[in-house]
Image (cartoon, rainbow, N blue to C red; front, side, top):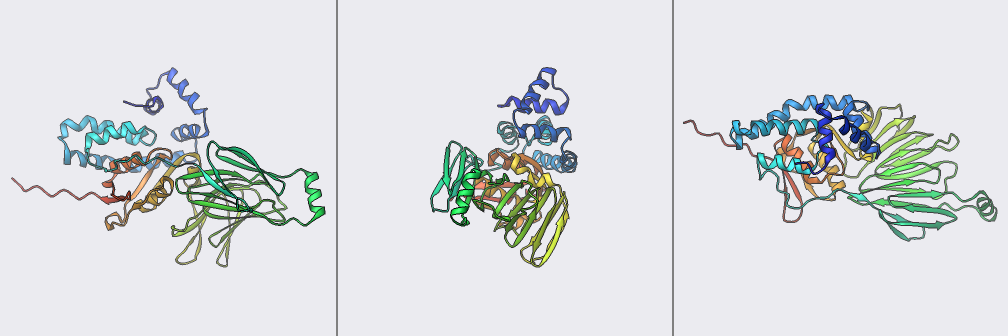
Length: 406
């Protein structure tokens, strides 16, 4: 039984059984938030990612079906389980990425009660960060904080999960510049593991900061607008042709005039990447330089230092800021690094049995880790188990021993 009526409506919509009243309810739901609208766009194929996701699920269908049928033969009588398998496959392939944890839990229990061993519910990240002022003062940023700070005549407006810098009035700026040269003053927003935050800089540029990331920036921009990033940040840069916007991250420097792009530069990742969504972006690293057009990604392998350019699906690289995690033939270890940061847990993927394990799919970013683990467990033979120290260990399930011939 669904614990969320939207799950039922989504399933009816995909299967073509939705009533006119249900369609009205679903359309009203889609207007409630950008994330909801994106989900319907993806299902309809209206998003740039829609056709790609459709291909992804067609690609996975046979593999998913085989994996589930293999579990049937292993644990239950085939005839008894046929209806359950068909229902489970339909839920998984059509709307499994959108359904509540209750449906997945029910399917898991029917197939194998001991499949995953996660006795603790691991909740997703929340809107939280820390603001470090130039004075050394540290402000904890949370969903409930509503306040206004002043630093060097700059208004810092904090409203829940957003922080905005407001430039001083022209009269104040003139008075300050006449009295003394403006000293360059920096602030830093740090987002811990299990957090995310949104920042609006003094020039109007918006930055979405992912878990385990930070951004350092001046209170006032001068001839150039320069910021430093560690981790992952998505930018929507305010256009200003006279003042280029420059991002420095792990030896890579990106220069734009007005554009939107994603930067991924975590210490524990083998590559530093920047993905261009709109506009134009000049990327420099290790003496090499390229200019990106929308849909391209520039990356530097840390081991070699080589700068390369590739065509990518930009939505797959940036949907995290809209509440979705999208994987396309991505290694299990890479996915687990993202899950570690977002859920603030330690995931051990050191088992050699995981070599070559790839996943394709899409999940809600605000589901519990248990739900995502159940999906991965159903579509491949991996087991998530919580250790005594809280670490979550991932391994391949051992193959059953062949039964002796009778």
